[in-house]
Image (cartoon, rainbow, N blue to C red; front, side, top):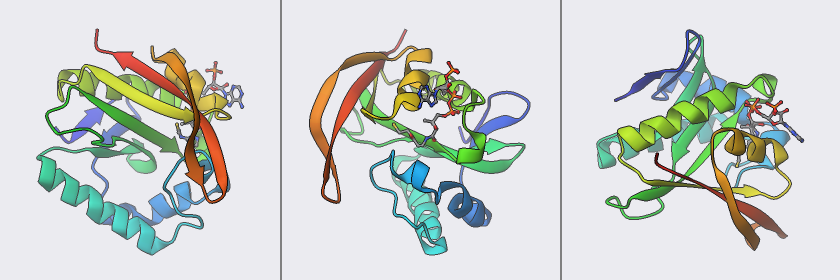
Length: 176
Ligand SMILES: CC(C)(COP(=O)(O)OP(=O)(O)OC[C@H]1O[C@@H](n2cnc3c(N)ncnc32)[C@H](O)[C@@H]1OP(=O)(O)O)[C@@H](O)C(=O)NCCC(=O)NCCS
């Protein structure tokens, strides 16, 4: 499956070469990058092209789409995906997501994450989805709670960004 239609305007599909400029423009904001672990800032066109190639390579390696573009009326506005953190046969995985700041607080990620969880449970046959969130990222924690994730605990100093050690809240959702 390479296309998920969420409503008339929102969809998930593969990121393509011609999305590179939109990817760079949507993700290259301090407010996005400070909430995720491994996105460079400022984000260059070469970073976008590397990511698009990586996603295509993953698709070939795993024979399925692992990272998806979030589209509004066909235009890329963000991304969502699984990290393939465990073995390919594992019943669980970690997920991550982001949206360009112009699209925040309109309920978009709540709709997207809900649809993506359904996809992972039904198509990828996962049983447990994990989402570690930096403790200061209240908006993302609200999205997870609205999508039925439960907070399992605090991961003290679990992540390092430059010289900053960051606490994270571990959220998880179990297949119905
Ligand atoms: C986190 C993120 C994906 C949320 O997407 P979104 O489409 O804005 O989320 P939604 O609109 O569906 O829901 C956000 C909720 O958080 C609330 N919220 C946002 N910022 C908040 C804050 N600082 N304090 C309290 N609530 C906040 C919103 O009011 C909304 O709640 P409501 O529906 O009860 O009003 C988006 O902000 C983002 O991409 N951030 C940067 C990257 C990131 O954090 N990725 C996740 C890493 S774990």
